[in-house]
Length: 315
Image (cartoon, rainbow, N blue to C red):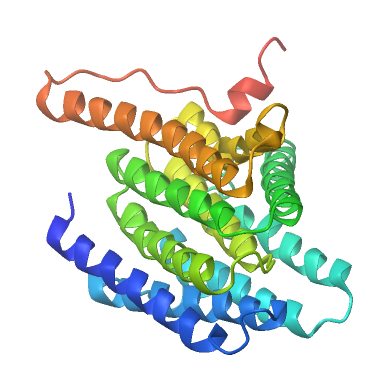
């Protein structure tokens, strides 16, 4: 496991850098959605970069590994999409760009992996040429639907609670991936998680209910990438990945009767509490499994069925 002190320093630096950057940019323009989006985007980028620097993670060029593609292609593309969204006059175009980045993220991360390439000779790829497009399309569709649903919730009930709930999910996903055999990916996820949290706290104090889609888009891309890396390059179970992917949608329960009759603050607390509960359960189960694997007798684990096995079930 990585050094806890180093991780704590990186998380603190990411949180402070994001919160301070957001505050400096939004202080005099706190009621402007454009400036709030700028604060979110620059704060996320600054916090993530400084946190990764503190941990000592340096991507390699050309990006041959999934983690290098995350840091050099996926996250920069998500940040660039938010800058482009600020200057595009038509909101649908901005959302098409966001969905394009999110939808392609899994394909980029899995590029030249054993799932898509014959690394050990002809016919050795894990997903057949006929099955792979369907799996990637299913992953992309689920990712995009989750992000759109979260943005609809943020539009319906503006505030920073949605971003904070997403930050908690990101933190939980990072810890779970770390406990599931892919420590580096988990370490990478800590900085974006605390960057979103820092900007969320600053936004709650300064910007109030000024709407912005930036934290939802940036957080959704990061969360999806972490889960793809943990599931396909680590030992993250499909169940845990799905629970973490859909956990932020639990925030919708605060909008249904009779909870919808409550004020904004109680509903915000309900959103954060429900998401935290789901994430805590997933992290706790991952920690128990990690403890059993580390200290229990050596056993040959039963391999989890692949997505292609599920698709071919009953044929």
